[in-house]
Every structure is written in structure tokens, then in C-alpha cells.
Length: 547
Ligand SMILES: NC(=O)C1=CN([C@@H]2O[C@H](COP(=O)(O)OP(=O)(O)OC[C@H]3O[C@@H](n4cnc5c(N)ncnc54)[C@H](OP(=O)(O)O)[C@@H]3O)[C@@H](O)[C@H]2O)C=CC1
Ligand SMILES: CC(=O)C(=O)O
Ligand SMILES: [Mg+2]
Image 1 (tube, rainbow, N blue to C red):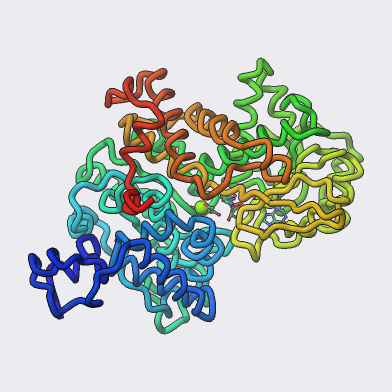
Image 2 (spheres, rainbow, N blue to C red):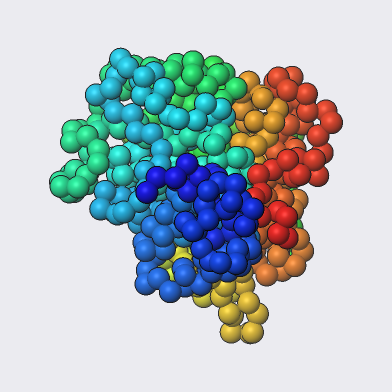
């Protein structure tokens, strides 16, 4: 059956059509129940149905079908149940969904552009039926969360990110376009699946890759205009930093894994400075990152900028950040130190150089960090010994295990508290449940995920029509996020505001981004009259009348 209203996810109200709407749209007899239901009632029914499903992938598929059938219900349900539904449409479930994407029953959503379509990327983009696209999330899927190269299966990520643009950033779904650039896949097991939806070939590299990317960028700007925001997501390390450098001053774009993560990481650290027992000045901290990729380098760079703002010279600020990568401690004189890591390769004594590759514990003992940040994709790498050592060095050790999904977390919340004598200030990229301590206190681990940042930054970019997204906008986003954390949350060990208020958080971040755009003269839209309330009122919130 094809009915113009029922087959449109945007127009469909399923069981909520009033009698008058049923008459007007020739729906009488086609929809039920006899008495129309309210949106509130339907959200309740949806949550009950989810509870009856056996596993996370069933819930994911169910929710994607709701989205494809009744957009209003989907977004109203998510916005009214953020804490419950975010893990089902975002990390950790989206990781599992991407791993099995070719086998799942998921309605089509997004645009796949293959390397075999080079030379006619504009024609493929022209097939996207929406005309007013304002935000694109694009991935080549080489590094999907911490799960590696998933090829065309990675579509769950751009889709998931843009669902959060709407659900948490209040940007209308029709303005959002998820794109996968299928340039091949180097994970054999992905390609060996007979159901694999992508190209059965190794990844293209070098000029062929760059030319394809350039063709895509030009086609996107041509079709959707220079103000259309392009968010780079989950690119492999060798391309992520390079592409950002190439395009950041030419386009309205940012890399979420580098810059969004930087802002959420810094925000958590700024909040931690308010905890009793933690040195209250950023300058008095030493950060050790496990993982020196997009996320780690991104966070460290923003910390450096925050330190410079406090009057610290760049050279000194860089020395506050140390890295361990897959080869051990990064130091001056070590072999295989990439350009991005070089600024953080500090001078060390021969004895420190010697322990540099003998494990994280030895490095922690040598560097004595106040904060340990995990962005390595290595599950369990924050061992009991490492956490214990952090707690020996610090009254309140900052331990952020930011790798996603949950299966890649450097430690669990429970481990962080248990091995630090309940003194760790913990945050994680994927959600962990609250932990009841032996003394009866309940700790609420915060979710240090860029989901707190990119919806608000995206909204601010669209409102201001900024021509570029400089680092200072991310700094403003980090400051804003941190100031929204209340004392009660800090007391419970949570370094981030309540996820349930993500729409409000995004409005505040958007305001900060608009102000920064105006301060730098980058805004093409007049934002002088905007305040947080006005921004909040204009946000897409289909269940608003219900509240
Ligand atoms: N919470 C959040 O909001 C976000 C979390 N992340 C998560 O962070 C993780 C990393 O992402 P990203 O930085 O983009 O990935 P990259 O691939 O860019 O970097 C991974 C880094 O981890 C290092 N590494 C790999 N194995 C080890 C090891 N055994 N010991 C120490 N370091 C190791 C790599 O070393 P080498 O350089 O030597 O190869 C590299 O520096 C992912 O799990 C991702 O999901 C990312 C973005 C946002
Ligand atoms: C959260 C995110 O962007 C990542 O893990 O890649
Ligand atoms: Mg990412």
C-alpha cells in the first residue's frame, strides 16, 4: 500500500491522527485505533515495546523502523528519554550495529558514494531528495569508534551523529545528510560477508583518495552552498588530521573526533578543577594520554590553548601533555614520531627513555601525571596497578577512559573507583551505570562523549552561518559545558551536566559559538539579538506541546 501521508515519515502520525485529519487525508478506515492516541501515550507504548525486545540490536532495528515510519514519534521519544534511548541509537549499540550492518534489517537512510562513482559524484549527490541540506556528517569509515575499518557498514555513525543533531541540537532532520564515502575496506572479514553492502576492494590511498575527497567536497559545496556545515567523522588517523588542515580554512567544517572530543575532554577537566583535592589551576596539572591519534592530539591541543589563555607560553603548555602510543612513551629522539606528535615529544632522561616502552605503569611512575586520559581503543589498558599508581600519586586522580564503544573502554567505572580507593574522578566515552561505594555513596560516572558538543556547535554554526570553525569556538563550547555542571553533580563524581538536558546544553553552546563567530567577524547571519531562550525556542522539538 502506498499512501502519500502514511508513506511519508515526516507527515505520518500513525495512531495519533485526529478524526478530522483522517477525513481530510482520506485515512478513515486505514488507521486505527478508533480513538486517536496522544503523542505521550505513544511514547509510553514505544518504551514498553522496547523493554520487551530481547537485545540491543533488536532495539536498534526497531527504533530505526520507527524513525522511517513516524519521525515525530521517534524524535519526541528520544528527546523525552535521552538517557534511556541514547545508548540504543548511539554508543555503544551503534558500534555493534555497524559491525553487523550488512546483515541487519535497517531501513535505508543516508547516501553512499563509492570510489567507482568518481567523476560523477555531483550526480549521486543530486539524488538526495531533500533540497535544503544544512549539515552533512561524512565518514570514510576507516576508524569506526574503536572498532577499526568497517567499510560501508559504518553508515550507522553518520546517521547516529545526525540523529543527535536533531534530537539534542534541535536541527530539523530534513536539514541533515549522512554520507559514507566508500573508498574500499581493508578488513577482510567485513568484505568476506556475502551480504556486505560495500565495494569489495582494498582502500584507495594517495592521490586517488585525495582527488575523490576533493570532488566530493566541491560537489557538496556546489549543491548545498558554502554555509552547509561538513562534519568529518571517524576517518583513519592518517587522513583525519591531514584533511582538517587542508579544508578548515576553505570550508565551514570541523572534525568531530579531533575538535568535538577536544572540547568535551577539556570541559571534563575544567570541571574536575572544581573538585576538592584537585589542584584548581590547569597550570598545575600534567596530562598523560594513552593514544596519540585524532582524539588524544585534539584534546591536548585544546588544553594547550586553554593554558595559553591563562598566560602560559606555548612551549611550556605543550610540556604539560605527554603521550603513550602503540610504541610506548613519545619522547624527543624516539623513532617513529609523526608530525602531529612531535610537539609533544619532550626531552627525557635516558632512564625515562628506557622505561618508555616497558608498559603504562612504568610510564605513569616516571611522568607522575595528575590526569590519565584513555583514547587508545585498548580495553582494560588501565589496569589495577595503573589505577592504583595514579591514586598513590594523587589525592584525587583524574582518570578518563574515553575509548568507544564500552567494549574498548580502558577501564570500567567500577574498576576506576575500586582500585583508587574510591578517589578517582572518572569519565568514560560510553555510558557506565552508577556505582554504589562501600561507604554507601553512589557515584555517577559522567559520559565524556563529544555528543555533548557537536549538536550545540552544529547549531551555533548554522545560526551564525560562520564561514569556518576555529579552535576558539571549541574552547568556548568547552567553557560553556563545564559551567553547566552543578555542585550536586560534582559531588556525585559526575564531571558533565545531566544528559537529559542536552537540548538546553546545546542551546547554551550554540549561543557561545555565535558570540565567538561574531567576535571574530566570521558570522554571515546577524546573531546580535539571539539569547539562549530564543535559540531554545527555535529548536526542533516535536513533543514540545506535550510537556
Ligand atoms: N569519547 C569520545 O567522545 C570520543 C572517543 N573516541 C575514541 O577514542 C579512541 C581513539 O580514537 P582516535 O584517536 O580517533 O583513533 P586513532 O586511530 O586516531 O588513534 C588511536 C591511537 O591509539 C594508539 N594505540 C593503539 N594501540 C595502542 C596501545 N596498545 N597502547 C597505546 N596506544 C595505542 C595509536 O598508536 P599509534 O599512533 O602508534 O598508531 C594511536 O595513537 C576510539 O576508541 C574512539 O572511539 C574518539 C573520539 C571521541
Ligand atoms: C564518539 C566518537 O566520535 C567516537 O568514538 O569516534
Ligand atoms: Mg567519532
